[in-house]
Amino acid sequence: MKAPRTARRPGPLARVTRDARPFLRARRGTVLRLAGWSLLEFVQTFLGGYGVARALDHGFLAGRPLTGLLWLAVAAVAVLPAQLATRGVFGRLADLVEPLRDGLVRRAVSRALVGALAHPTGTTARSLSQVTHQSEIARDGWAGLVLTLRSFVFTVAGAVAGLLALEPRLLLLVLPPLVLGAALFLATLVPMAARQRDYLTADEAYAAHAGRTAADLRDIAAAGAADRTVAESRELADAQVRAARSLARWSGVRVVALAVCGRFPPLLLLLGAPWLLRNGLTPGALVGALTYLTQALAPAVQALMTMLSTVGGRLLVVLDRFTDAPPPPAEDGDDGHGQVQGHGGHDRGAPPPRGAPVAELDAVTFAYGPAAHPVLDRLSLTVAPGEHLAVVGPSGSGKSTLAAVLAGVETPGAGSVRWLGRPVRAADATSVRVLLPQHAYVFTGSLRDNLRYLRPDATDRELAATVDALGLDPLLTRLGSLDALVEPDRLSQGERQLVALGRAHLAAPPLIVLDEATSRLDPAAETRAELAFAALPGALVVVAHRLSSAHRADRILVMDGPRTRCGTSAELLRTSALYRDLAGLWEPDEPLRENGRLPDGRSKAPPNGPSNGSSNGVVHGSGVKSTPPPSPV
Image 1 (cartoon, rainbow, N blue to C red):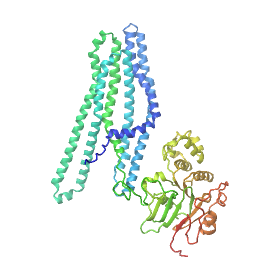
Image 2 (cartoon, rainbow, N blue to C red):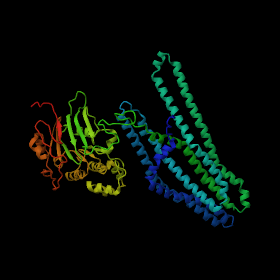
Image 3 (spheres, rainbow, N blue to C red):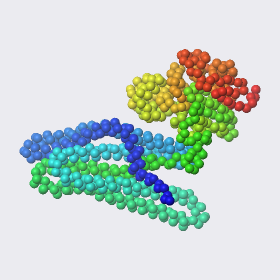
Image 4 (spheres, rainbow, N blue to C red):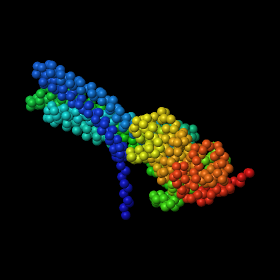
């Protein structure tokens, strides 16, 4: 029986091309605008040779020097619009280059975080190099490649159009060496990238070996391993030399391709000039053709091939290192046959159990250190779909810790946390919950990109609904449009929080945790934001800093270190001395909700019914169950 044939892994060019297609498709408008500005370069190239030909044939050689000067003036003036277009080209270039770098940095950081969560002791400096050094190499290389390729395409198009206008037979002498040289050059792309990668690998291996040897010199001498170490060094050095020689040989092939493309066309044109002149080619057309070849085609070809031979191979290798992601780590419970089971017994890809709570804490204990007092002590909490839970308590009572544990940011020392009936997994984080801290993160970019950061496929209609729901209209009006640049330093703290809230509202995951994420908003803006989130189908957990925020919730969790109590506002006013104290300290911004009704008269019943408080800190039903240590009082 034959062994199963393993699928052949695509090469680096195929892997990079696979990721490049969606990137370019998403920026089709930018590419078209870049091409529009580049048309001026096409016009400049066309008029450069055509004007020289007409100046000779219809001007100087015909005895009309003024006409000749006018044609030369036309060719010279054509340079001015091309220079003016440079500003537009560089503006559109930024729209192509900066998103690439940002995407590479996000990919490297995400990979590093996932790897660190899966293997805390196996982290390396690879991601740091990708974020700092390799992403900049890719950014600069991509910018140079786009500029050079754009110039090459429109310069060659202008030169070919000019040659056709002068004499179509000129292409019979010009095109063959161009096509031959280009084909020879393209044939070296993949081998050169492979040799470049081999050279980098050999260089890294030798550097790593040299570092280990320098650190272990005393041990090598004591163990008598000098000969073995020298042999290993020689072998690694020989591998590096072989890789360098192979790279040099392919570089020689590229030099030949460059000579065929850039030097052969003018030479063939001069050799064929007597035949062309005998068959009707004018002297002006011959000089115009030489102008195209020497002033336009040859420099463009040389610039492109030089760029591809120096930057192109390095860019391909660097981009491939971003696309060449390691396989995802195996989940807990992997049976070794590709069937991964979660702790709860559900298949990894299975849908959550019907009616499962959005989030559950089961006897969770959390402390900041082995000898520290627990911030959460055997806390059990259930958050149902569509529920609005407020968390209140004095400073240092563990509210932010609860939010972090509930969102999967902190891992409890004991107990378990489940999302949608399944154990918490880092891979599920972005699809299940959003945690917004007090200090909002806003990056330099358009308002549209900031809002769509967690949901890039959001439509303009959905963006407009989020802007209206959260009251982002004044900020949008001040900026001018969704595509206007957002500079974080120029936003107030409240505006930053509104942008972050809009990002979470647009994503609308099953669980949203706001850890004082509205602390910089005025009461009216905070009310509007929380009502907008409460209207979403998912569950909402709010760490409240105003009593009015707690009144809008279905249930309120009062935290005092490990002691907790849960219920409605009316129930807690009767059963919780701490809540009564907090109510006395807070300024009530709106009347208390009565019988489950919001201040505007809307009704939103708790999903699992009311929960009853008790003096020993145990809340039954769908509330919170905590078993604190005996009270000293």
